[in-house]
Length: 633
Image (cartoon, rainbow, N blue to C red; front, side, top):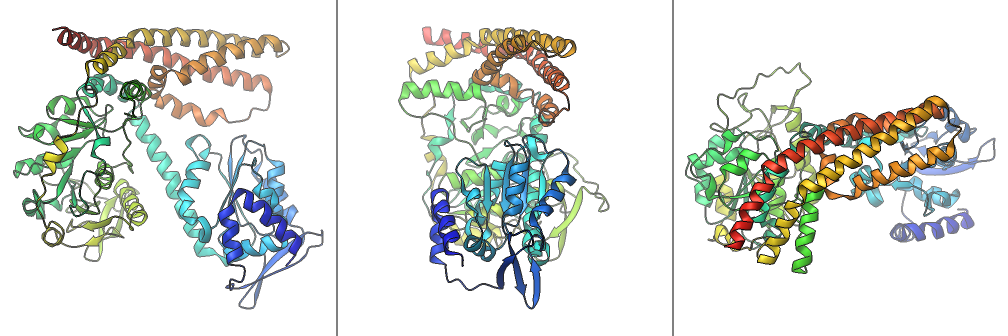
């Protein structure tokens, strides 16, 4: 061991990752699975090699590690300003330092080291202090130390904007030594990238409906309830049963009657009609979809169950349901601003909580159950597969039948409950993997029972029939409906009501101002394009235009109504955002691109604000006038 290097590294590590330093000091005599040795390269660098069962592997090159990094950089060509580089293997760190020195300072680097032993040895022999500087955007992921943070690191380092410019560096011989670990890491990375694409596709799918829904549904908040008051409401011995609309629900839907009054039954929206048709009224049902069809909610008893909803869901279900509505956050800035206004009057936070989801309404129902305090969550109808070529239970949709072609990339086979395999769609497989991750994460405080009696096997959940689950876990009477019905409304006092109504009334004026700001910005971008054509000599003039553009952009970023308008334009952003970070060879070309992209965005803002103003005048304003009349009576 090079003691001076080790202590220098440890001192730097303690400043940035003190827990890591403690782990290394505590495990200083840890027995390694293989021998990790060091020697000098021809260029004078300390290089590392692994002796694994008599086979010697040099990590990142035997002769000149820095040249290996040079070769990789040459192969990559120009690296975008805001790219993320994932480096697999710390080795002696020379390659990492070379890459950091060669790429733009705005590039983010994530280092994945599959071996604690190699990291520990590198700390003893090579200077890694440059990795632990506070101002350097470098993340380090070592499974044995912080593997549980892997997805959080992905989420921090990789976003939709830079995923197209992602680069991966694989250190020499790592694939031979740690093939399983690297394959698993790449598999999880691929899943994360797919989740980004799915989330963005979902945003784009709702790009022209979310704002429309919000302004049609916002007034329900005025008379609604918050799921914040449902937090921890359930005793620890009362289970939650999540009812989804998978085909296997046909098998055991009537068995569920034995759990009524002994569990909190939460249905997904698609499961509501099949349940109500059998005379079962769940305690709550959850809706998340901004495009959910009205047919699912046309039932005489639909209003008997409380609705877990948000302002961005479909308009028709909100109209058809006349019962109590319990809101979670839509994430909309306009809604958040209103709730902050109410919070100030109540002198406590009234912000609506979010529901963790993986894209499926069943995910939201599951996380709601945990949020309400359940220690046991029972899943039924959660097939996540095409049982009998069907995606849903009878009665959910009319004449539903799926055409399955296993040669198509849209379908695959997964393990089935009871053994064998079952056919699933790719979106269902994505939902299955989410359940398995969250069940593993929550295993210490929530046990998950899969009583679906069919469909895909959910690893981490305990399988049993619904009858068995009810007998074991539904052991005492509990009126969940009564307890849920006792929570107070979000807006209660006259003062709070007046505040909300004034807020609604200001919508038209604020949308007019957004349109005016968009016009100003478009004019500025026109001026920039002229300068790009004429030449870039007049830097003072360019700077003045940039200041005006900055003022417009700041307004769009900070004003809650403007942010709502921007949210309605996800499709435009989906197209433009990845190109923003592309580097043009000439400054005038880059200036022209900036101006063109800015104009496209602001033109969309201009027209969207006009459309939303018409919706507001049709929905919120008439409602506001009606409520003012009630208050004045």
